[in-house]
Image 1 (tube, helix red, strand yellow):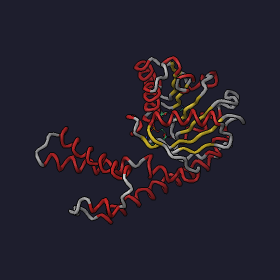
Image 2 (image 1 turned 45 degrees about the vertical axis):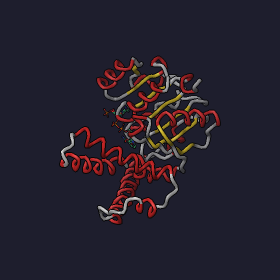
Image 3 (image 1 turned 90 degrees about the vertical axis):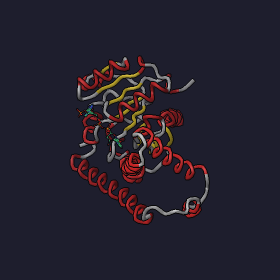
Image 4 (image 1 turned 135 degrees about the vertical axis):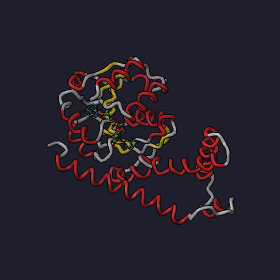
Length: 271
Ligand SMILES: NC(=O)c1ccc[n+]([C@@H]2O[C@H](COP(=O)([O-])OP(=O)(O)OC[C@H]3O[C@@H](n4cnc5c(N)ncnc54)[C@H](OP(=O)(O)O)[C@@H]3O)[C@@H](O)[C@H]2O)c1
């Protein structure tokens, strides 16, 4: 039996990521009576809760919630406010996982009582279909049991890689927001398919399968980049320029999160 199904879960922040977490937990077999959800937007949370038969917790009632695992998926600027109100609520043995960009582990740890396991995950939208790549960094007080639990949660979302907290801002460009760099490639390939006379559906299928197949070649062989390119001799784009564009995109995303983190530091992690 999955350890996920034995726990009570609370999702705080029911936007893009919160909704993905709820759907994947339900898909993994967690029953709706073990899932609660809280969001600042009352009508949004009520609609979501009605769809999945979840319990709604109002933001002001959070301190009365005794979930085993707290999934914090609010905007980064709201994390401090949420956790500050929970000092008297969270207990040793509970697990708190933050999905917020730019909020370091040390800040999270300073906001919760000792003994609470703190984990940081950089979410990735393809998790909606169980194909995400969600990097994880563990806090100092992580137990083997909590690691196993988080491992199962991340497996329900797709793949993972353990990184240091310092690498997390890079992870926004490497995985968290990387889909936004890749989607224009798919859009352009689909547009070309339409020009060739394919239906939108077929053009999109061709583009997406070619990207998926290329990714699988990279994942499932140990061919070098040059060997992979040699499998298709016709060069169609300025490859060095495109590679450079993606490096710049990742650097740019990191710079944005560094700036966000500096801004959050001005209000202080626990001040
Ligand atoms: N989406 C991604 O692909 C992605 C990638 C990497 C990292 N992340 C991180 O994941 C987190 C969630 O992202 P998202 O895209 O899901 O954002 P989102 O769609 O804006 O969802 C955040 C939700 O949290 C609610 N909220 C705000 N303050 C709250 C509070 N104090 N208590 C309870 N709920 C509150 C928001 O309500 P209102 O709209 O009413 O404010 C909103 O419904 C962010 O911290 C982001 O940095 C997301």
